[in-house]
Image (cartoon, rainbow, N blue to C red):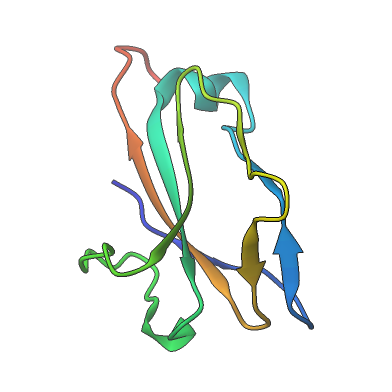
Length: 100
């Protein structure tokens, strides 16, 4: 399990209507079992990179797994991202029986 946190980098509130994520390389696609992106903005200081704390209280932004492409929200809906927000990642890798 790998649980980093990344800054979103917004300076003003912004609505998103679609979210897409996927491993960025062929090698990453071979070893990534799933990735969950939590939106951490109610209390951004509580996100600690590498933390194994229970993340169920954070808003789900998107989950990626093999075969999934993106999430597209219905008309007139979306997710509000606030300045200072972070994405708290929960990424699970699996062995493929090859040397890196």
